[in-house]
Image (cartoon, rainbow, N blue to C red; front, top):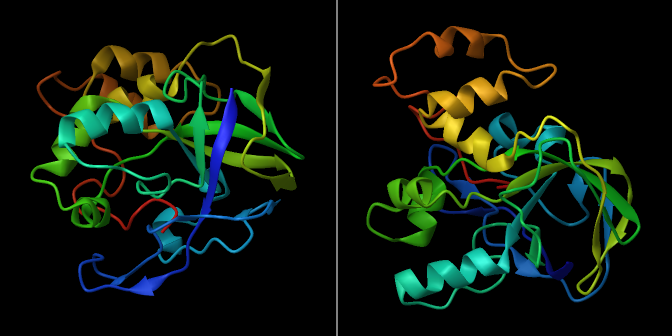
Length: 224
């Protein structure tokens, strides 16, 4: 399990980038090792701090295996960083990672916090018909992580899972819960410190989709 690309981006003006008209979704591979700070990777900007300024979204990881899966279906090359991730992994079950799982990468320690939610900026950036729906139905969201210990990371670093909570709730579970899966939502509700507002959603009819914050009006792109 290793990192094959460390990616950072700067915020640029873009008419297609939601209400802010700015985004940093275009992440490019870094040539050298990159310092990791509490707020994320050095040199990596975010345009939408309201929706993506949380410490729980400091770093975004996506698996090269999932890129390869998408390449076959889209019929186009997808370079590392195309989805706006900071860390492109190989051999890591990113979507099956347990919430609270900790990864030792290079000189830093990261903790899995949840899945990415597709949005209007991501849709426009990809320029694929029905992209948000397709990305959601595929169930390959990638994972957000927070920084537990600062350090540095670089391409080629091993990913070592040094802690894994016993509750077993995964990134995929959380993603399914956000999009109307009642069984997944009940699993998420077992997490310590979960948002109590989700309790009310358990009682809803399965026909009523469970919406995440900002889903009605999509926010700017992850880490953008």
